[in-house]
Image 1 (cartoon, one colour):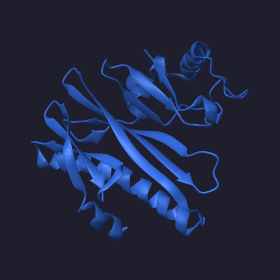
Image 2 (image 1 turned 120 degrees about the horizontal axis):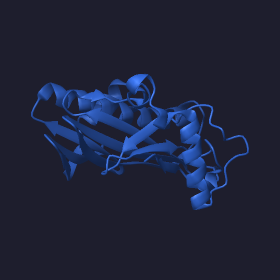
Image 3 (image 1 turned 135 degrees about the vertical axis):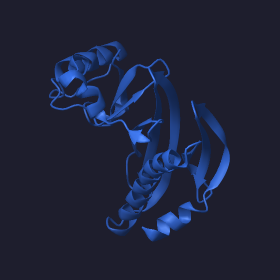
Amino acid sequence: MRKIFLTLLVALIVGVQNFCGAVTIETANFNGNEKIVYPVVHAADAEIENKINRKIREELVSFIKGNQYAVQYHNQKILDARMNYEVTCNEAGNTVILSIVFTESRYVEGAAHPATWKRALNINTSSGNRMSLDYLTDIGGGNPQFSLENVSRKLREHCEREKIYLFDDALPLKKLPENFYWDENLHVHLIFQHYEVAPYAAGIIDVDMN
């Protein structure tokens, strides 16, 4: 772990990516690796800046450690490892929401295809706090928009429209997906990973809940 954080210190900042309210976002490469890209946030408040970047580093370290475990404990040879991100920023009342969606991929020798997944960070830039799924589901004691019944309906409609085959036991959903984000129109998107509700060929399924 110490080695990973020391390596983070020599990451290369490569350019300005985006502006979000009171914060500026720059792109950095992990240890100069152009395939592993992550954001660095700059804010007027140093404490908030540190809180946000700490959450980003946790995601980066999790990805790097996963690669190390694959090599050390599963005796796998990694042929390719990639990490990139997209950012959206919105104002909801007095709250500025920063949504960072990471796309991460690992391709090991002998695998039929890379393992790819998306993970999202949603952050209140006024406090630096993460906005978890509870923020959606606990509003007013339970937001019906994000009930299992309604999300199941939205997923079914999305897959029918896109002609995506769902697993026979995918619906009704037993639980909500772990990752979500806000797009530039303040629409909430739920992310279903490979194999979560459909075969690999369906890709990562992104359902707009609005």
